[in-house]
Length: 154
Image (cartoon, rainbow, N blue to C red; front, side, top):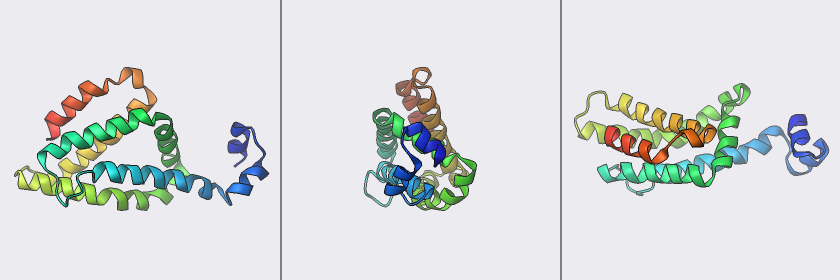
């Protein structure tokens, strides 16, 4: 809280007027990010993922990253902190598990070998691209990367 108050140029006591603890401060950021991701990954509102959904999901994810880059930079910096990772692991899994299951089912129906592992690779690629774009947007051409992703994982 001391670092936060110093960075925000306010007193630590003022922070505690609004937030009872560091967790009270970061919890809304984490849940807001997860909520947005759930909307992106569940964008078709159906129980299953179709081929066209891949393009839409990737488009929505990249659009969200571009429109709210500063938020996502904060989000990823919070969830990557060593003391926070243990706390946020379960909520993140709860939000993302249905998406991984849908992608696994899609790959299973397509007859792909190792459908769950491929779904996990797809999710990890999205995470990696997201973090790299947030850190170095000028070095990460999202339009070209989007096309590669769609062709590889669709």
